[in-house]
Image (tube, rainbow, N blue to C red; front, side, top):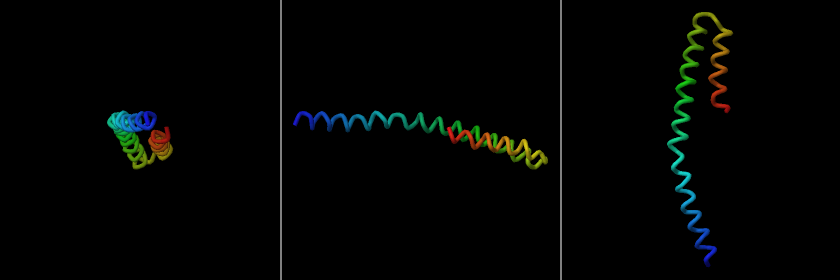
Length: 68
């Protein structure tokens, strides 16, 4: 019975400990989205200017942000 109570308490409190990391993960994601948006805008500007190699480079770098 003691093992069951200990297991139950650990299960309950472990979940709440991990819940505190959500804001940190969201902040990290927000910074990646912001950086990717800047690279996307720069890539599209290069595309419109006719510099397609620069455009592809910027857009691929933006995509790489989400692979890591």
